[in-house]
Amino acid sequence: MSASHFSLFEVLFSSFSFADTNSQERSSSQPTPTPNPEDNNLNHTNQESALFGIGLILLGQCSQSAQYVWEEYVMKKISIPPLLLLGIEGVCGSIVCFSLLLSGVFGPNEDLTDTFTMLSNNPDLLYEVIAYTSLIASLNMFAVLCTKLLSGVFRALIQGGIRMLTVWMADLFIYYFLTNGEMGEAFVAPWGYVQALGFSVYLVGFLLYVEMF
Image (cartoon, rainbow, N blue to C red; front, side):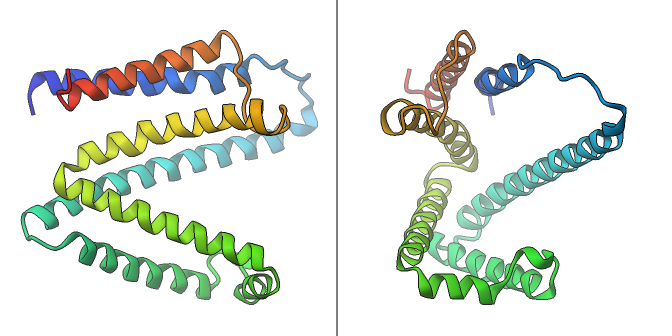
C-alpha cells in the first residue's frame, strides 16, 4: 500500500470524526443538571456501563475487521466461492446464536415461545421479519461479492461511510417530510454543517482512494 493510500485513510478517518461531531456537540450543549449526591452511585454505574459498551463496540469492530481480512484471504487465496463462504458463515453463526440463546446467556430478555406466538398472531410482524431477513441476506451477499471482486478495505469504507451518510439523510427526510418533526433528526446549525462537511470530506477521500480522480 502506497503512502498516498495511508494519507487518504487519515482523511477518511478524520471525516468520520467530523460527521460524528453533530451528535456529540448537541448532547454537550444541553444544560447540565444540578448534581445530586444521592445519584453518585447511579452515575458511577452508568459510567461503568458506558465504558463496558464502548469496549464491546471496539471488540466487535476488531472482530469484524478480522472477518473482512479472513474472507478476502479464503476467497482469493483458497478460491472458496463467495456464496459458499456466506452459507458457511450463516450456518456457524446460527449454531452459535441458538446455542447461546438456549443456554440462557441472554437471561429472561429472550423467549422463543413468546417470539413464535407473536409471529403467528401478527401477520404484519411476520412480513416485516421476512422482509428484514431478506434485506440482510442481500446485504451480506453483495458485501461478500464486493470483498471478492475488490477488497476488504473497499467493503469497509462503503459499509462504514455510506451507511452513516444514508442513515443521516433518512433521518432528515423522516423528520422534515414524513412525521413533521415527531421522529428522525433535525438539521441543527452550526453542527449540521460540520456533519455535512465531514461527509463531503469522506466522499472526496473515498473517490480519491478508488482513483476516480
